Image 1 (spheres, rainbow, N blue to C red):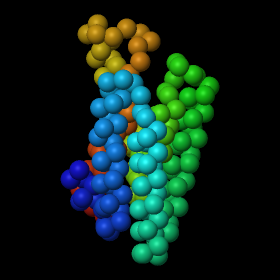
Image 2: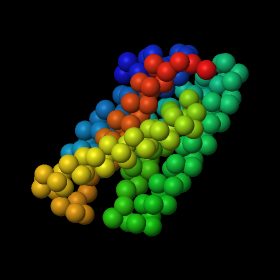
Image 3: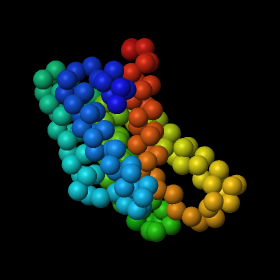
Length: 168
């Protein structure tokens, strides 16, 4: 949460980040436990992030970050939905696509690199854990790993990087 507070340049962006964190924490635990990301949390997370980023754009007159966030969210969500539909149960679920909507919208406000970085960090984290589980014999090939906690962790790491990176 500190990353959100330190990275946010305006109050609406701060509130968008805090709203996302409030939604992301239960999502991480739910997905880790039952491999589901419920619509009752994923959709309000995305709606709240977009609403607050829109307020920021309206107040500051800076629409570019909102446009970047919208493009990031649209592209990432389309890719995730496509993967989910093509691979079915062998791939990521549609809940992951709905989570990615809010992750990439929030991080996309800082730019496409931040949104992409959060997704990549999520995949890297899941891959590392998957390898450790396979090597230790705690999982078998084809086992399902809930991706939500990893995408959330990737977003938190990127927020922290945005907070401590020198601004341009």
